[in-house]
Image (cartoon, rainbow, N blue to C red; front, top):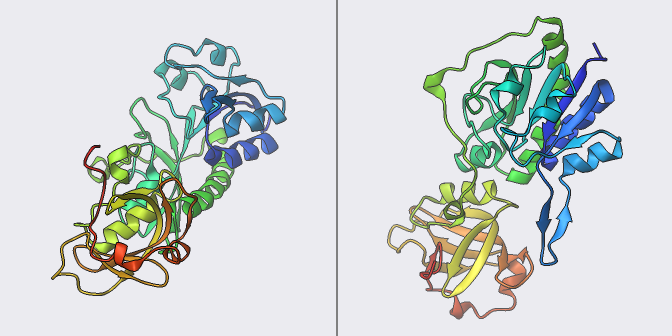
Length: 318
């Protein structure tokens, strides 16, 4: 079975351990990833993490701008199975129907929960206590195919998008390698997704970065963790803009204060009134400066310049 021809589709860092596992155990004849992009002020060409790994192993790399119309080169590879993991484009039916063993997806949630492109972010933002990896047969609709296997992991209060991402990418590799033999010998289960339990995790929009202090402290605490480190949460205090990466909840009753009012400057952060308690911002990036612990920022400010100010999500001009 190790001689089957595998085509892998993926793009970001999350996909790399999965591809590494396939390279070590199977014949990967091609890798499909998103086109190269220009990044930074110098607009230098940047390869995706998956492309870098494929080139290191002398594997053919294909980068269709729109795979719905540019799939002939993939079919020419005559794949026995196509495996995707965070590729970033919808796979056309002609590709789904081609491989002998089907098209398999490694998805970072416990489907049918959190279909879509931001399941790790949204698992934390939505306050989930657990999430996991699903190996599934692909279908024409997004993340709607039959489930083959799942493996869950706990979401800790200390988890951020980054730490949960790192846990799930390793679980994805392990679960895929554990599941592939059953797919190839025909013994894999096919479990229909319960349509009544479907939720979605669409890609993060700019508006979702802004902190709305009329929400509860727990909602904001989860939002900040779920967007750390990318794209980061945002707020304005007075007229100063901040990115926010970590916080803690100070259980002081704030029912007599307007939401968003800066109540205290603690040793470790800036305490802001929410719907129920204080949220203390502890890891921040002031506009135009580097990311820092709020304790370091506080050492260079006058407390009276902040206490009593109102924090809100965005500047009025946006």
